[in-house]
Length: 305
Image 1 (cartoon, rainbow, N blue to C red):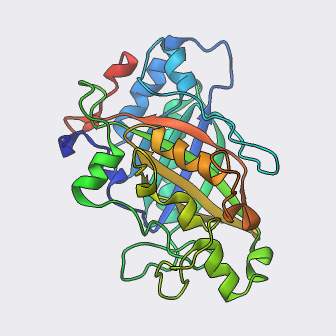
Image 2 (cartoon, helix red, strand yellow; image 1 turned 135 degrees about the vertical axis):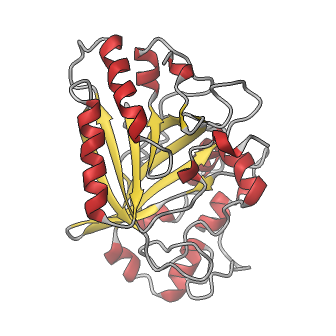
């Protein structure tokens, strides 16, 4: 098991009451590695891994002439009738807390530290919904999210790299997708059909014995893959005006488990498409590498910092 002092602690802490998922890009293609390093050096003291979790995109690793084993851009998992877009990102920050005003102030500090090398490209404001006794929040459909998350040592094993050496051990690979729900389509299903879409009973959260093969639970059962495909989900609902959905976030010791699940959801394995695509659709998708911690600060040695 990897030393817990190496983790960005917010990854294991669970979902906060409110959060912002902020994606940054490098607006000037002429920005050199020196200015990028200076910006990241200014940023590092603001990211404690708890109030803010940092992710580094593959293109940023390449711009610094560095390498992170196993990191690559998000594939396009689309196939006939199913769209799973790839929208690569440069730098990602999960700003976490209990007060939206505080999150705005921290976002501004991060933004100023990174400027002018980086600029905000996209922000998703998210929240925890209907927190129950289980400790998991719910999706806006009313179904509990993260029921099958591993816990304790198994969560650490699933979410964090180990045995790869200093500067990598304790890091995590994260897949991020913003899903837009068609709540009208979902509400039109009725209770029984909705339960079969997810493969669970919405009120009791019990898994259905007679769930169809296209039920979300059947498509993503982590122990049903070879090898098993466990990830640590930290997804959160989002809304903007009357549009809403789920910001899907899955941390892993590598990207393999997420990719196995996403391929099966899209029907690449057997032609059966996850019922989730009938009531929701992903509009973006990106991979990031979340560096480890060292003496309470981000460990950016792998990036040459």
